[in-house]
Amino acid sequence: MKLSKRRSALLAAGLSGALLLSACGGSDDSGSGEGSGGGEGGSFSIYIGEPENPLIPGNTSETEGGQVVDSLWTGLIEYDTETNAAAFTGVAESIESDDATTWTVTLKDGWTFHDGSPVNAQSFVDAWNYTAYSPNAQGNSYFFSNIVGYDELQAPTDADGNPTGEPAANAMSGLQVVDDLTFTVQLSSPYAQWPTTTGYTAFYPLPPSFFEDPAGFGEQPVGNGPFQAEEAFVPGQGITLTRYDDYGGDQPANADSVDYVVYAELDTAYTDLQGGNLDIVDTLPPDAIASAESEFGDRYIETEQGDITSLGFPTYDARFADPNVRRAFSMAIDREAITEAIFSGTRTPATSFISPVVPGHRDDACDACELDVDEANRLLDEAGFDRSQPVDLWFNAGAGHDAWMEAIGNQLRENLGIEYVLQGNLDFSEYLPLRDAKGMTGPFRDGWIMDYPVAENFLGPIYSTAALAPAGSNTSFYSNPEFDALLQQGNAAADDEDAIAAYQAAEDLLVRDMPEAPLWYRLNQGAHSERVDNVIINAFGRIEAAEVTVVG
Image 1 (cartoon, rainbow, N blue to C red):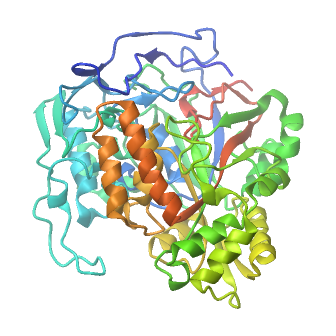
Image 2 (spheres, rainbow, N blue to C red):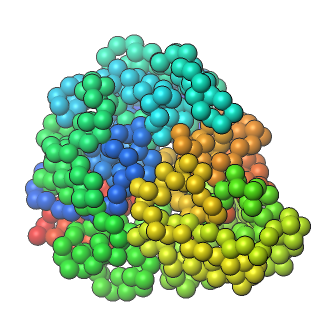
Image 3 (cartoon, helix red, strand yellow):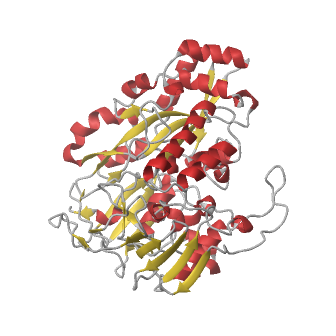
């Protein structure tokens, strides 16, 4: 597929003198693409599952709602679809710092929200404060934990995590509006890669109308992206977004509208794609992968994904509190056999908690990711694990996880002598809240797609104490101060080499403690109908909806 987005200068990852990250112009690298001008018209449809929450950026941390939110908003920076590097094609003109601690963000003039209100410095500062303020219970709150004053926005809690009072403040002292187009961000410690994180959903701006009615806003959001919501999202059905003609970015939407259609079953969506009743499916059912390329030809899409699928462990459950039990389960799984038999080789067995698409991945990081039945049984015996009781294996329904979870269960039975019960009856929107509330009674399916292309994103948001669910995405409820300290050391490093060394040391602790068992990385497969072209599925698992052209 041809790529038509204009790209500005890519963000540097390391420190070199004064930190200066800014837009330096750009050029069309594929102007012959059909989507290069924008505005060709027509309508197309995209499959999604049911979003977990209303469509508010600060509370959207999963793929289904994230796909819609990314069509409605544009952040400070965006990510290049070929290199995954951050680029100044968003709202930010520059992000500058002399010490990697205090950052000055300068915005481009002329951006507006879909209701016509201006996108300004206050739009970002107010949005970030709202998301960080713990009584608002926003799932992306922890992404602001490194900003000075974040702790004062967290309510005091008892030993069980229940609030016992109100936060000391409702605005982070580390955020200051300078003027309409400028604000400053003071971090609690140096973080040279901080600008690269700001393209993620959590950092999107919010208009004044949000604060007047957050609940109503979540049903019919007002963003600043290439598409706008002129109607409310209907649970179980979806939403139609229309092109925003006053979009401030380089790439306006090519189509007049996009229909996001909710399906309870991926297989049903795939059948509709085959029958011409749906235009784009971003991931295929496992049993369709082998034949999809021959069936769809050049409408079949393969993308290297910045993701990882893992088997999470409820570390709060007495049966799985011992790291040796968790390591034993991991060592009883034959990843290569499953990826070949079920995924036709389109998954790569995981050897690290960090994806191969970002610097810091090691091919030999995880010794417990190798099949070793004898050692697995020795560890289980040493831990005194009761093999007479079956284990529950949890996964969300309708997304094609049944076959591989059953394969894992069969391997646990064969290699460890443990029976299993599949717990796969909950929809995604039901599964996630139960998982966040410590409702898993056994190992569970977990998946992560990177928010930003930094090794830390595969560690901190999933395993740090600051990211404990339900406020964050640490659903194994692992907490280790030594791990947290190494993450902070990596964030504060003066160059990429030192940062990666610290992140890898933190990963070594995960390998020892095994709160989750890395399973595989995905080479994502999608497909589209004959009605559309220029379909790009990026390494974040998102369809670049604005790029899609309707041709039939």
